Image (tube, rainbow, N blue to C red; front, side):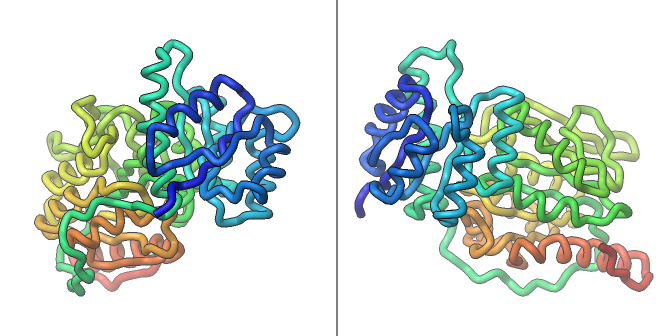
Length: 360
């Protein structure tokens, strides 16, 4: 199979050189060309026919957002990875780019990093994303592929909703969280693979469009209905009993699946704390984080819904849950919020002996 052809678009000659050298170390990736501006990039795309583009946010004339907008008009399916700084401004513009159709993002090394460390960070961040978005790889299977079992829901009430997602997740969450009703009767805990600052701004963005309260997770906060907690970047988030209630905990234990926060960590704690009273949702994302945690939820008697392949940016995480035999329903993204509301309302109605109501 030929290597993935990449067009590097960045205003900085230093960054272009760093990216070229870092990507040259992978036999699966080849730099097809570089561009110092958005206008040059748009002219080179039909000449070079790249499989993936890395795109700087801060450029003169056409900036990253404007260039992305033009790329999406001309090449709606061409994968674009935004290359942004790990700053408040960089995070805010990156989230805007993702909402406008960017496929993924990676953060630039800090100026304090040595050249060797910077190249290694770029290799770790970018190579796997490039290969995955080019359709050459999605996830490491945990078990032989199986069809999702047709399980009947149990009689127990759903008392918590846990969501895990990664690549493509901010937009997927934007199609789910805002469509949960204001009287949603259970708390929601979310892991989205993102660094610090990004997770807080994501929470603020979702909060502005949702009837529910959406916040970045804080240690010791009690879980209440109508609240959505997003794990903060660089912290695992867990839940635990405290007195008659349940609270959030945060820790910086080692990454799992190369991630912190990790979906597996959250899902394990949810299964341990709530037993069968859990509904978990795994959406678009690279890798297999969440598959083992979903098995814990499944073994405890909880339910697992996954996003389907057609609507996922990358069917890595949900596909791994299906392959592990943990999923009991596969849904297109536009139907996930409805499936959540239906399951939660029906389960709580069965548990109380009352007729279920459909709420949007």
